[in-house]
Amino acid sequence: MSTDFVLPTKTHFDTFKDNTSIGDVITYRIDATPWEDDNSTITSATWTVEAGQAAISSEAVASGIVSANVTFSQSGKSLISILLTTATQKKKVWLQVLCRDLQNETTDDYGLQG
Image (tube, one colour):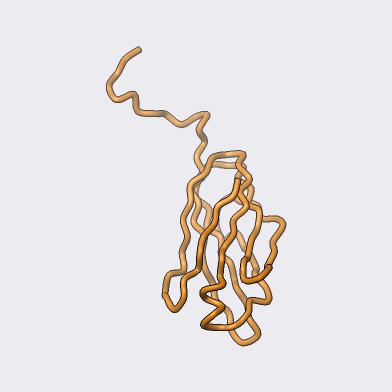
């Protein structure tokens, strides 16, 4: 499974949001080429779990697209920072993910009784 985001040019937008379920491994890709056009080439991206139970692997930067695999093993919210580094500056963006336990989550039956 994968999810793609785009980092816009000249904006204060810096937070991406997603929903998932326990056991999912999602490849997140952030296309930062519009941002690079007004700044400079991204040389590295550091993904860090600031809060929650996510695990990050396979971080990469290629042609303005930063990516990583993120595994979710527990329900709850995770906050991940992604520090984009160029030769002259740094920009931090955030990824907020709500992970649900679909096996134990109650669902609304809309008043229907079985």
